[in-house]
Figure 1 (cartoon, rainbow, N blue to C red):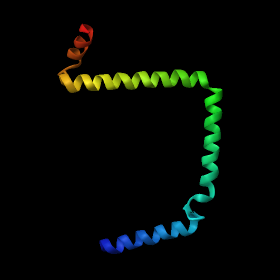
Figure 2 (cartoon, rainbow, N blue to C red):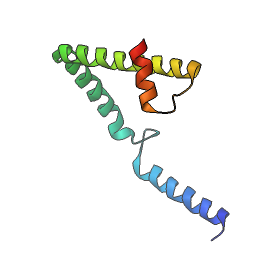
Figure 3 (cartoon, rainbow, N blue to C red):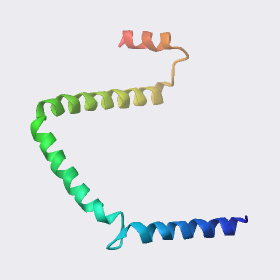
Figure 4 (tube, one colour):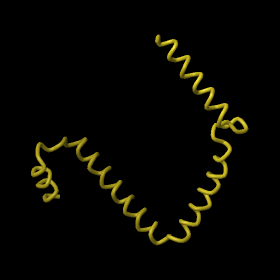
Length: 94
């Protein structure tokens, strides 16, 4: 089979998928809108119900991201240490 024949078969297969699952011009549209609405409702409920958990989680993730960003800046200015022991000794000096 040539590349052109292979591409043609793929296009035919994709057309069959569109014919089978297209709804109002959107592939998967029959269930997509309802799912998106449900996801928004569940997200709002989760945010309200688990506010304390989200507060702690988001704060930790922000701290973790800041830590990674700080290290990236440090290593871009000073280079990467050759061993982990060297890296640990740098942190004990700061």
